[in-house]
Amino acid sequence: MGENIPDEVMKNPALVKELADVAKDEALLQGVLMRIQESPNSSELVTYAPFTLFPSPVPKAVFLQALEVQTHFNTLVDKISQDSDFLQEALANTIEVDDFTARLFRIHQQILEEGRSQIVLGLNRSDYMLDQRQDGTSALKQIEINTFAASFGGLSSRTPDVHRHILKVAGRPEESRQILDNNPAAGLARAVAKAWELYGSERWEPRSIPQMKNSCYQNIPTIRKRFDDVCGSGSLDQDKRLFVDGKEVAVVYFRNGYMPQNYTSEECWDARLMMERSRAVKCPDISTHLAGTKKVQQVLARPGVLEKFFPDQPEAVKQIRATFAGLYTLDMVGGEGDQTVEMALAAPDRYVLKPQREGGGNNIYGAEIRQVLEGLKDATQRTAYILMDKINPAPVQNYLLRQGGPLTLSNCLSELGAFGAYVRHGADMIMNECVGHLLRTKSSEHSDGGVAAGVAVLDNPLLI
Ligand code: ADP
Ligand code: MG
Ligand code: MG
Image (cartoon, rainbow, N blue to C red; front, side, top):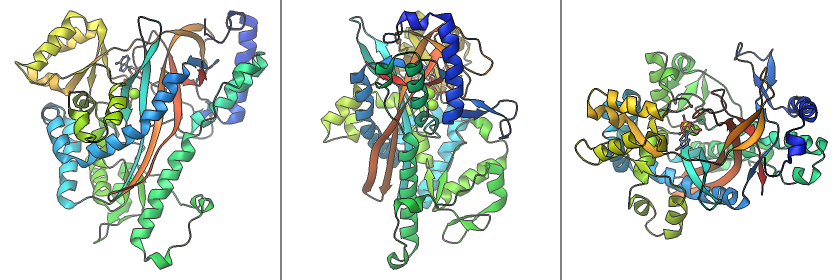
């Protein structure tokens, strides 16, 4: 199988072994690297980041569809983040029962009262699976959109050369040309640099701004800090400018803070609040963070909601809606939510039950859906979750290469992501782009989990 990779390659153990060795070598050469689990903060020991031996086939039409709809998703996320009434209504029941979302929401409310920054920087990734249709074609269906710390923009720019090399060594130079260049990191960085530049232009008199050339961006100083460090070394001045270690901060990029475990103390929450209150550009700001919750995703799928955000753009509504899978509310005890429960209990294998969490490994599948829904003490507890149709992509055979792992042929499922980047200054959208893609592939034995969760590996689409 493997569509474009013939069995004589896929199922030739000696060749596969040789290719895997070549592949790992090439990964090191191209910088497809990660630190090892035993010493995650040390650069002394590194290994190749996990990846597939072969690229996976993706139909060109659905691939392009994902890239094309991305600017509409950027606009949508941005509009949601500005619509506090919508967020309030969408999350009202969720925050009654989910403490983490409630805490984020309280920060959001405080920021609304105090006023928000004019400059908005959005970097996100909309993820999809290709749902198999009866007629053999596949439909692009959104799994979720990540508005917080959407990762692999860097590594995914380096994997195309690895797969090209493997295919050449395997004697498939034609296929090697079917692998696209990809450089999300460059586009994401461009957006960060724009936000930085705008912060500077608001900060200083126009006359004194140095002319910014692209090469200047390389000189933007960056610092990496943990929440608890920021709590100690950060402060706001009377104009709410953020200073860390005595230096003024223009842009805060949150790499962390999307999981409750990221806030190990009250000081971490204090640091988050301080950064949110500051004039610095936040990526994401608190309202964009909330716009990326799974509850908001479910509300967007309700009739008429997209139309509200795009009153004059029926084409955008159509393109976005085409990617929605069935999403169902668990709110409304005695009403709609009861029907959702009934539906899920009757055929749990057709659905995924999702809490308001990120980072992989949190969703509930199959028989466990029944257990969880039946085990909830009272019905309102269920509003911490949403229910979603399970997407069923066609499995493709491949080898997953990870340090110390076996070299076995697996049935694999892929997830395609499109990276979005936008910058808004007041009412002006200054940048709104799709800046690249990501393909991740996992063994079909696993229902859940991404690369960081140790389940999926990096891949490249082989357009067919
Ligand atoms: P997270 O924010 O934790 O990444 P996701 O919604 O992306 O949450 O779910 C994690 C993983 O679970 C996905 O990468 C995908 O493999 C699987 N998954 C999620 N939703 C579905 C679905 N509707 N159908 C099939 N698999 C799904
Ligand atoms: Mg996510
Ligand atoms: Mg995900």
